[in-house]
Image (tube, rainbow, N blue to C red):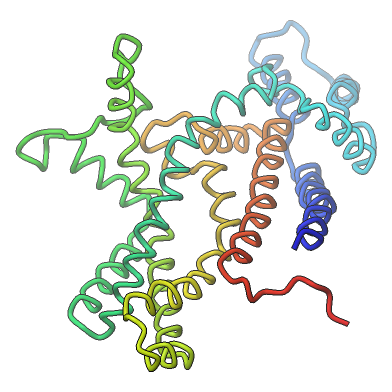
Length: 345
């Protein structure tokens, strides 16, 4: 197993280069960018009376060249990518085009906000979906299974945007519930957060993050629950489960020691992708609940074509996805010792 994971770890390096290179090229060949944004502002000022002289075509061409040299866009894309790689080794992603602040500082400032509701949503999704899927498999065909499946598909059919807005209307205003708002309308914490005690700050942040966490679980809740149910049903109907039952083993031992361990294997495959999504924040959830996380930063950077910030977020998500795949392989091997990693002749 050690040699296998060493090979997988080494394989992460070319995968990282490939992922970042593809996005780097896409970013460079898309229309717009820092040069076009700056030219638009300058020409707009000169045309609206902000300057005494209207720029000629030659002036604009010279200014464009100066801006390309300033932003390092006067070189071929492969040379720019190599220069960019040399900088990110020291975590130097350059400055934001819009705020002029270091791109990495903005990532570090926003990342804890996304992690604050992303990580709890990640673990709660598995902690709820696994027992629910197992219970639906054990009660397959019963009223509980039918009602649970109906509710899951009903929730799955509602977009996350609609779920988030409904949660705000129901639980954060006094229009629906007679007792008034239960949770704050938005934001990460209250205005008097600094004056609260440690327990008060924890409770205040919990109230602000409860609804975003619930909304983040909606997207994968139904798929993971039904995946766990189908996997458990397949294991229950397998030959070795009937053999264990024929040997007189206790039903609880058969289900949870022999069955559940193998039924968890399909659930472990998607850990890598989910980890990258949660660490990258949510472009839908964060703006609705007023959370200044990575998702909001990604949306603003994309709209402003802030190349340095976008590439910093791409590096973060790429590392999260690649690390998640390694974590998924490790969990897969721990859950199923039958897996052999030796190379086959």
